[in-house]
Length: 433
Image (cartoon, rainbow, N blue to C red; front, side, top):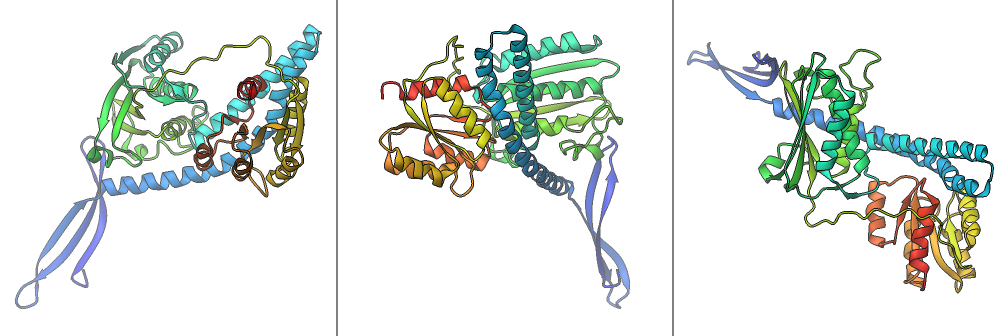
């Protein structure tokens, strides 16, 4: 108060166990003789500002981890792609049942590795893979069944879902994972038993309501809630719960990735999360997924007993990974196609000029040195607007996919992908053209 004024921050404990962050400003008031007579104070609740600053910092940390994870995922997916592509060919070629089992094991392990990479990206960036209409009521009932069969019997589970839920487009595997992670957290918070309720309802989020939560936008949502009667979350932990590797559990009992993964999934679907908790009474996690009006249910692809064969058509395959290039070439040639290859976009244009009148379709990686897939597609479209061009990538980067979407490719395959899926899609677009 040497200069007649001062300010600082204090923390006030609330009766419910929470904390208020208060900015205090003091001004010294003097009388006519210049003597200090009173102190005038202004107290401002800045708890919300503190919370927003912490959330922004958390998002920045997640972005840094996401950049690291994306680079790792891209490289490992390129390693797994030849394995996933070649194992079905090996299974067709062998007659030894024991050897076929070993090949099946290799295939299963490679796909499991791809699943782990997908979860890494989900945790880091929350990017959905295959997008389809989500049967939310069914998924909640299925989660209820799993909880009844696997959780302690002293936890009672129930489901409340509106019958007229709006349509949500998303990745069903990620949606199930988010539900499971929240249910496991609820289970751990109810060591002495309790009630777990899963619910779903349509909500309209207005501008004022959206402004209360970072990344929330006004519009229609389906709100998925997971409510427990457990211990609740302490205020000091609440602002950290979505941070990677942050856990309040004992060493060895928690990784700190469960809620980070949930946050990544919801954010990757364009939604947001709200948490309501009270110590000693329980916690409710509300996941808001954007609703899509008049979206159609995805049609399940029927499995084909025999792969569709080519009729000698010439295809151009472009990838900077030699192993990926070699396996795709061999697979296509085994199924009735002729193949020419290129290692990047510039090399692909050279090959295109050489075989311009013969090439019937192109399969190109989207992330390559010198000239990437997007630039290659744009260049080829100027020379052959009707040419079927398919994309593939080791990671569905959000920015890249926005640019890829503008190209309106028939399909973009996420590595590693089943070779049968590509052959079916390819045949559909070049048959009879």
